[in-house]
Each structure stands twice: as C-alpha cells, then as structure tokens.
Amino acid sequence: MIDIKALTLKLLCSCILLVLMVNLGLCQTPLLQNVYNHDITSLDGKWQTIIDPYENGFYNYRYEPFEYQSDPGNGAFFTNAKAKSKTDLVEYDFDKSETLDVPGDWNTQKDQLFYYEGSLWYKKSFDYDLKKADNKLFIYFEASNYQTDVYFNGKKLGRHIGGFTPFNYELTDLLKPTDNFIIVKVDNKRKKEGVPTLNTDWWNYGGLTRNVKLVEVPKTYIADYSIQLDPENDQNIKCTISINGELPAAFPVTVEIPELRIKETLTPNVNGQVTTTMKANQLSYWSVESPKLYTVNISTAEETVTDQIGFRTIETKGSDILLNGKSIFLKGISIHEENPIRGGRAHSKADASQLLQWAKELGCNYVRLAHYPHNEHMVRLADEMGMLVWEENPVYWTIDWENPDTYANAENQLTEVINRDKNRASVIIWSMANETPRSDARNIFLNKLAAHTRNLDPSRLISAALEQKDYNGQKEVRTIDDAFADVVDILSFNQYIGWYDGLVDKTSRISWVITQDKPVIISEFGAGAKYGYHADQDTRWTEEYQAHLYAETLNMIGKIDQLRGVSPWILVDFRSPRRVLPEIQDGWNRKGLISEKGEKKQAFYTLRDWYSQR
Ligand code: GCB
Image 1 (cartoon, rainbow, N blue to C red):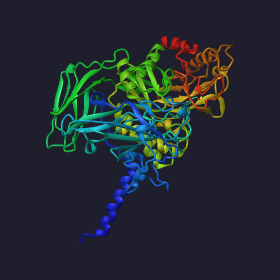
Image 2: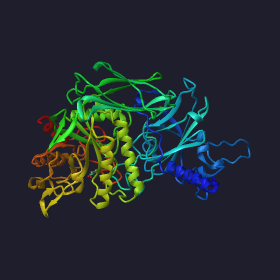
Image 3: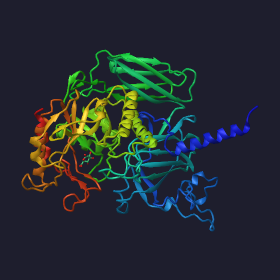
Image 4: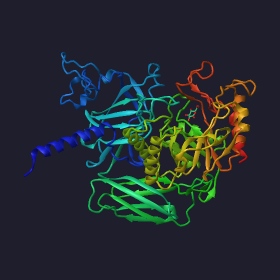
C-alpha cells in the first residue's frame, strides 16, 4: 500500500529543501566554459534601477518574501507590475527609474551610492529569436557583488552568493520573442558569516560589476572541458569534456589541435562525460619568455567551441618552483581589481591591459591577484603575455570558521574560479586565504578547502598568505609557526617590518628560521606613500620612506635561503574605507607603487632595478 501521507510529507520536504538550497545559493546551474567563444549577445549598457535599502520590493510589510506568497501582488519588484487602470496601486516603476551602466559598480556611478551597502534592483528588457527553434539560451553573469537574486519574466531563477565569480541560468523555457525582462536584486551588505566577512581593507563595490551575456547553445551542447598537460606525464595532454542538454544515445565530440596534428573523436558516456589522454609530439611549452598558445577546437555535429590554450608543467622540488622543469624566481606584484584612473572596479580588457602592462614595466613575471578572483580578462591576458598568476579565494582575516554555511560558501567560490580558469596556463597557484588567525577551527576549514582544491585540480600549486612570528620569544628572529604551512606547496607569508612593525632600520636586525623545506614567497610587504610628498627617508608617507623600506626589505628577505618569489603590496593605490587620514589617505590605501592617477613613485624604480638584476 502506498502511504499517501508519508509520500506527501516527503515531497513537501524535498520542495522546501530545494527552495532553501536555491535561496542559499547552493543550487547553481553548471557553469558554461569559455563563454568568450560561444554565440553571445551582450546585455551590457543601461539597466533601469531601483535603490531599495529596506528591501521593500522583496519582503511584504510582515517581512515575508513576496516570492513565497501564492499571489505576490503589486509590491514585488520582480513581477515588474504596471498599473493597468486608474485605480491600480503600484508604487514603483522600473521604466521611469534612473539607469546605471552594466558592467560597473554602483558606487562610482552616482554620488548618492558612493558609500551605499544594501539592495539595488536592476531591470533589462530584450527581444530574442533563437537561431534554431530547439536551441537553448542562458544568461551568464561574470560577477555580481555580493548576493544576487535573478528573476526572468517574473519567475525566480536562483540566488548566487559571492562577489567575484561567474554564474549562469537557463532561460529557454520562459523565453518569448519579445518583451522579455530580467530583474536582478543585488545586495552588497557585509555579513559576519560572509566570504569575505565584515572586515576588509578594500572598497565594497556593489552591483553588476562585470559583463552580462546571453549565450545561445544547441539543444545538446559543449558545457565544459578541461584541456591541460597530464600531471602524470608531460608528453600527454589530458582532456575531459562534458556534454549537456538533451543527450542522445551516441553523441561524438571531436578535439582538434591543428598545430600539433591532434584530432580525436570521442564518445561521451550516458552522462555526457568523456576523458582521454592524447600524445603531444613536438609540443612547445608555454613559458614566461615564450607564452605559446595553441588553438584548440572542440566540435560536435551541432557546434564548435574554440579556445587558446597553453601547456606547461608547474611543480615544487625542495625549495624550488619548477616551471617546465626549470627553477624560476617569481618577480611579482600584488594587484587589486580596481581601475583607479577611471575610478571603481576594473572589468574590461582595457583595464586588465593597463594593470598587467604596469606589472610588465616593473619587470614582473608574476602577479598576485588579491584578495578575490579577478575578471577573466586578467587571466586570459596573462596567458597571452606570459605572466604567471596567483589566484585567491576571499577568505580574508576573521572568517566565521565554525559556520558550515560559511565553509560551503568559500568552497563554492573557489570551485567557481577553478572551473572558470582551469584551462589557463598562466594560473599556477590557488591561494586558500589571506592572513587568517591560527586556531583549530581555522585549520579544519582551510585543510578541507585545500583537500577540495587538490581533488578538483591536482595540476596546480596550493598556497595561502600566512603570517610570521617571533621565534622562541626572540623579537628579531622570525619564523613561520603555522599548522597550515605543512599543507601548502608554497610557503607564503605577509610581513610589514618597517611599517606596522618597527621602523625601517629594524629590517637589518631581522634573521629568519624557516624550517620547512618548501619554496618561500613573501606575499606582501610595503609602506604607505603619497605621490609627490617628499622629505627625508625617515618621514612617514613620503616617497623616500617607501623607497627606503623597499630597498632594505629586499636586503632583509634576501637572507631567506628558500626565497623563490615576492609580490609586494601593491601595484596601485586603492580605495579603502579604513584609510581616513586627511591630506594623505583621503580614503585610499597609499601602499601603491603607482598613484591613483597613474604616477609612478620612487619605490617603483627601486623594485624595478632589483628585478632587472635577478
Ligand atoms: C595586509 C593585508 C592587505 C592590506 C595591507 C595593508 O596585510 O593583506 O589586504 O591592505 O595589509 O595595507 O595594511
């Protein structure tokens, strides 16, 4: 006998669970790989917006979400309600509201939004004809900070949490030829349990900060692929492809790398997956000096997706970092994703080019993209320029270590960036976290994150920006005493001797006891300087102080035998609400080697000279 009661209860529970998962942002549509080379329609441009600090368009007056009501009524913004008669009560109107540019943070577009942390609604209408009746259409957001609820033609598609990674939803079933409307609620309130948490040293830019695209694919489509050197054998290319959509019994997919005369036709399994290794003869490895990228075509009977992919090995051996088997010193710089000259979050290829060009001018072969995943232009351009890359998860300072939702959120954001960038040769390091205080709960959190990362991507190195401390109570001897140091492949740490920790003369008295047999990267050091402010080298905030600190720090860290890289803090001055000193900071962290107007400070040349001699 079927127990109808039990069955109904089960069904109800699964429905509630699904709604909960969607709202926690845990139920995402798998991410499309390489939307750059798919059939794209850009939704960039002006979007209608409503600023909604009380979340009036999301909750009714009993603070219940409209979307859970059987009749959300005229108050719910996602329905795009319109007064149909003279008696109708509708208290909002997207079409008469002001617009904001997408992509773009809202803070730098309107004075009234400069410090805004809260909810803002976006609306965009569009007409769309599928090129083939049975094709599928997705909406792809390159990033939106921080919590994003997406609605299409009045129906909820999902919630995404995390401000720096892409996500997508399928639109096909709700699509009409004309008058489609996407409504997006973006909320950038900081949260204790968030990743990052309440406390950071950068501007909390809100909004649809990167491009938004419609992506049209065939009914059976190439959803994802990973094509990289086989970590087990550097003469082989390992290739995994996922086909999605309507899966027929057999649906062959061909991988072709014409320059290597590779062409293989593969048959995915019933779940649309296939993995193979392909012999690569006469492969030119991707390197800093010669960033060779191969054209790779993945095709089915329905479509071809093309990518530019480089092949290289990266590993550590004792205290060496080996790129294609050869020891390399990482001459780096840390970068925030900000375009200071235009103002606001960087998002375009031109922004990426400006930042990476400056790094190149400095003599860098490596950049640390701090403190969260940057836009995809950065890593694609790094691939083209031969610039090695550290990518970082926004696990910063004092995360809510014991909260399982916080962990799930951190793991999800890391997974999304790994999925996005797994085919980029430039990316060599996944950083788990920055300056996190040591504790058992933190160790459990980070160990789990590292294990997850290794499982997802065994081909790259793991690190985290750790902290140093006194060795056996001796104030001028420094060591890394951190359980997570045993887990990482590269031992990285931040240090500010001469700025937060004594004055510059202290650097000459410091010695190091680093017992781990691993390569060491100094992931941060630096000093604040206001461009154009000159006095003697002992005067804080002068270019002279900063340049002196650079020279002395480079001497000090030169004593670390295992030193294999540095990424000083930081390429350009960046906005931070923590930095309030009038006439010097005025809302900017001044540790840049370049000012917010693009002017190079003395220390830029100090570091450039040091790099030119290595
Ligand atoms: C650090 C942080 C970085 C800050 C920097 C500073 O250690 O990792 O996010 O901006 O110090 O300027 O204090």
